[in-house]
Image 1 (cartoon, rainbow, N blue to C red):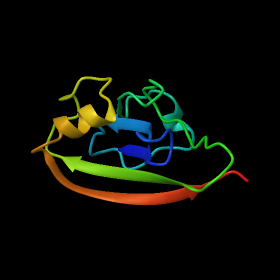
Image 2: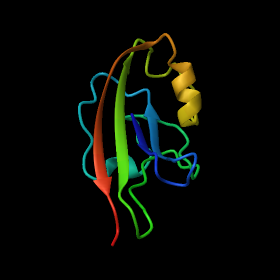
Image 3: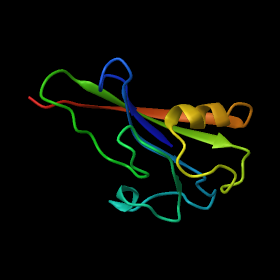
Image 4: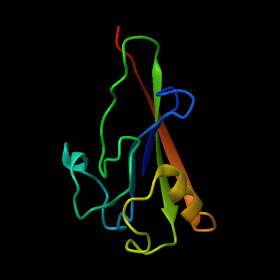
Length: 110
């Protein structure tokens, strides 16, 4: 599961959440559950070096697009070490991704 804001911190964007190793038995997260490390996912490394989700924090101004991407893989939940960045995870999933889906939400501050 990746959450990425392409407009944040140009030109690189902001990775708000990098989570992987989510067992197939996990079908949802309770409100607030992903804002801390749990045994339901392996925490990667966000742009601000957090192993868990941090939400939208845009400065006042233009609209930001928050892209959530869920990737199904053939890897066991413990196959990848904790702390991978978004780019490292994408590289590690090369040849192991079996499908993906996404959702884009928008947010801005006046």
